[in-house]
Structure formats: structure tokens, C-alpha cells
Length: 105
Image (cartoon, rainbow, N blue to C red; front, side, top):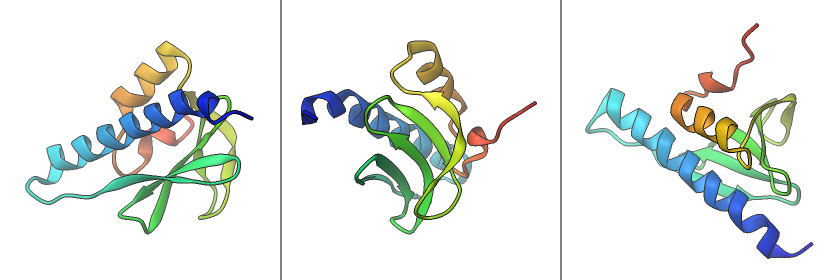
């Protein structure tokens, strides 16, 4: 599959990292945490300080998952970064500790 197809999803992952960093600074300024994107075969992994997985994002369709472990996402889709309203909701609810990824019933 063409790398050009993954570019919008990667850009939105970077926006999510910025939103997570902003949330952390808002709560704990002047301390900082760094959120980065790691590229895997099927998913982009959002990392906190390079040591813990915060979220997984499907590289093709932009689905956002809560981590089940360091290496794998949970089963249920939480958001979709390619859908405008879902992306907006994801970025506005983003909190550095990952609470925005819990399913609410």
C-alpha cells in the first residue's frame, strides 16, 4: 500500500500528541511530558516519554484504540481520526493519562 495513504493518519496522530502534551502542561506546568508516534506494521503507537503506550491508531482507516498491552490494542474502536466529528471529539477530550479512551456506557 502506498505511503501517501498513511500520511493523513500520521498527521492526525501528531495532532493527538500535541493535544496530549497541551493537556499535561495545562495540569502540571512547567513540567513536560513528550508524546511521540512510533510506526508499526499495522498501527501507529502513541507513546508517552517513549516508555508507555497511550493509544494505537490503525494506519489505514484511522481507528483509535486504547492499548490492551504494550504491543496490542484493545478490541473496540474509540475514535476515528479520518472522520471530522470523531477526530474533533478525540482531540478535545484528549487527556494525557488516557482516560479519553475508556468506553462510557
